[in-house]
Amino acid sequence: MDVIQRATKLFDRIVVAVAKSESKQPLFSLEDARKWSRKRSATCPSVEVDAFDGLLVEYVERMGAQAVVRGLRAVSDFEFEFQLALMNRKLNDRIETIFMMPKDTYTFLSSRIIKEIARLGGDVSSFVPAHVRTALKEKLMQMPV
Image (cartoon, rainbow, N blue to C red; front, side, top):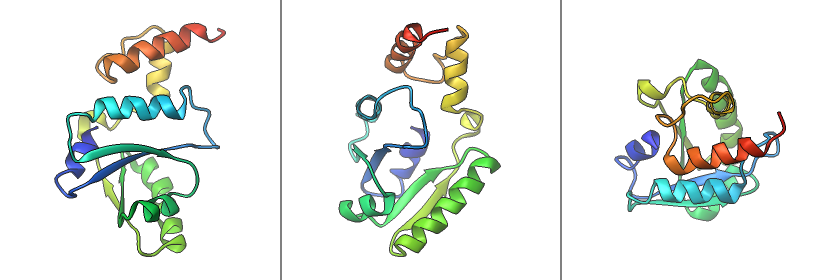
């Protein structure tokens, strides 16, 4: 949300595109992620939320956009994101990738760490909105130990 809010200062319209990922094992559905993103960004009138499956550059082209904004938390993010940006440029050189760093208070966060804290009974209320925290607890209670 931090990166989204700061990107609204640079662009008239922001589309938060929730992507289906074959390489990850998400805890929640694509529709859940889209619904929660909509709820979280409801106070930003220039932000819309959508979901897609397939190549990012094809989605961006369909949306009539010219740039992709990606958040970088750490050097380890940069290596992967840099490779992705170069490949996206090869696939469609009309689309630019812009990297933004979050506030320093968010640089250590990752969904993996948040899930682990929640799974071990820790308090994640300062990291995720209340509706996500509730869903996370419910989902983790259903999972075998």
